[in-house]
Each structure stands twice: as C-alpha cells, then as structure tokens.
Length: 481
Image (cartoon, rainbow, N blue to C red):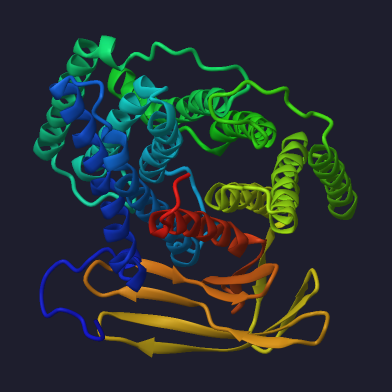
C-alpha cells in the first residue's frame, strides 16, 4: 500500500514487499495440491482393489502442484536475494529447507508415478512418496507456524498451534502407514524390474532423492533435538548440506546420463560407446577443462559439478538434434526438465566460485576501483515515507567498457518497530549482477558500502522456470508419455 496503517504493530519490514503477495500463496498451492494424490492413494488403500488405476487420476494434479511448488521456491529464492541484502539466493535456512524437502519428495514421486502408470511397478514407492510429500508439507507448516525456530520466514509463536499441527501430522502418518501395511500384499508388484530398464533407473533415482530428503530432515531437526536435550544451541549450515548434496546429485546425474537410452520394461545393453555418449562426454570434458583454465578453478566439488552439468546439457542437446533431424522419439518434457537440471548445476557451481564481494569506505564525491568497476559516490539524501524514513545514496558505476549506470541503495528506519533495514540496488546483465548495499557512516564522514559481483545468478532462476515450463507443457499436452 502507498500509505501506512493508522494503528497496529505493522508487518515485519523485510516482508513489506510485493513478492510476498505472490510467493507464499504460490508455495501454498503447491503444498495443498499434493492433498489430491495423497487422498487418491489413501482411497486406493482403503478400497483395496489392485486393479484401480488411481495414478492416472492423480498425475496431472500432481504435476500442477509440483509446478506451483517449484515456482514458489524460486520466488522465495529471488525475494531473499534482493530483499535481505546479503546477496545470496539460498541460505539453508530451516524454513527454506522445509520447502525443499517436499519438492525433492514430489520430484521422486512424479518419476515413480510414471512407472506405476505404465507397468504397475514401483507402486510401493509411489504410495510411500505420496504420503511423504503431504506429510512433509504439513511438517513445513509446523516449523513455520509453531515458533519452534527463529527466522524471518516464521510467522507465529504459538506452542498450542504447534502441538495441534504435530498431533495432526502424527495422526496422518500413523493412519497412512497402518493402511499401507494392511494393503501391502496387493500393492506389491509380482513382476521383477528388468536391469537397465527405465524402471530400474527411476528406482535408483528414488533412493537418491530419499537420501537427500533424509539429510535435509536431519539438518533441520537435529539442532532442535540437541537444544531440547542439552539446552545448547547448535547450527547446521552450508558445509554440511554441500558435503552431502554434491556427491549425491553428481552421481544421480551420471545415472540420468546413461538412462536416456533405456526402455520401459526392457533390459538393454547400455551403449556406453555410442555416438551421443562419446560426443557429449568429450564436449563435457573439454568444457570443464576450459572452465578450469579460464577461471582458475581448483575445487574438486566444483569441477565434478561442472562436468555433471555439462554432461547433461550436451547429451540432451545432441538428443534433441537427433530427434529433429532423424525423427527419433524423444520425450520433450523430460528433455527440457533434465536439460534445465544441467543448467541449474552449472549456474550454481560457477556462481559459487566466480562471485566476489568487498566492503569499501567511501566519501561523497570520491571514487573507488573494484575489479573492472569504477564506483563514484555521487550524493546521499533523506527520503520521508509514510511508515519509514530512508537514507538514499546514489552511485555512478562505470565498467571497463565505459558503460555507466546509477545504483541507489537505501537504509530505512521503520517508525512502528524501530527496525533498520537495508534495501539493495542491483544492475542486471546477461552474465552477472552488480549488487550494492550501503552500511553505516564512520566518524571520518565516509560510508561503508558493500559491493558484490554475482555471476550467473539469474540463470539459476531461469533453469527453475524452464523446469516449470516442462511441467506445464506436460499438463497441457494430450500425448501419453
């Protein structure tokens, strides 16, 4: 709103942003959407007829929910980047993590659902994952609404509500697992999964995603359990998650790379030395070596991440080209989604290794040099608004090619809460963002200014949008895949 309310405590200033009118409802639709496959699975278990194809009924609803969940998480990442003033897109915050867990489980569920529809295999996995996605969505509500953690994303401090949500989650899980055990004999497949079939790769994929969900759950809950038992706070941060995610995701990408040639319900001899495999492998090795040389990359985790990402991108580019030229069948939705995964991995890897920042002390009408940028502090002024006052600075930035632009970061003080926030100023280019925030004034009259150069960060969100687009194409398509 353009004006402040006349009374009330006012909303948390960092949440006073238009994206917060879009991000939470989108994420919520994703959560709630998975009630439909969960309800279909429970109805199937109650009915007890193995011939009922509940998976076909739930499929498009599941894809729609996954799309909203993907977009919701992406919007949250984008909001955190420009609003919090820290220049990151993911902080492994507990509330971010409880949104990631249902997304991981939902992604595995969609793959497993495809198998169940085609061959009635992996029904055990499909039902367990449908229960897991809905339970993890409820767990996210518990974390956000109970006040059990301290985060800018948490919205309440109500132990009674938290106990109610915990009891509700427990009831859902107990009843669901009771029905699952009761009907285990009718959902258990009598057919063995063929080695190196598409079903076998998807079952391995489920194990990878299950491991990631368990790791994130451990990172979220262990500090809470430890604090309860020992009355001491501990934190689980990025090093823990990176150490787990990188090897699992890279291994999953290698399995995905070789699964492209696999067939439904058929054992095939994997063409390890076929043309597309060799060409994409050579291109991936070449691109990785070029990146190592160009950017002086020495980190092993970054190198193997780049290789895995390039491997997927080149393989799917080759497969798409063959499909167009030779009319070979290729699942377009799978191709776009998995190509996007490769792009996401490369973007994250290069962003983490290339991005840099520096805090500088600068006075009005003075310049500082950072990397290829000349930063001139033009002026600073006070801006009065309805619910806060702001100090707004103007910086003229000129790059090595003599392109110039103005960035105007702010520091705000809100009247009701007395809270001081930092408002970023960002200049967006094709490959990088110039990200500026202003800090405090020092005794000598200079100001602390933090400048960050964030490479390929927009491509992280573009890859997520491409994934969502693949899901949307699948929902709108009439072809069976």
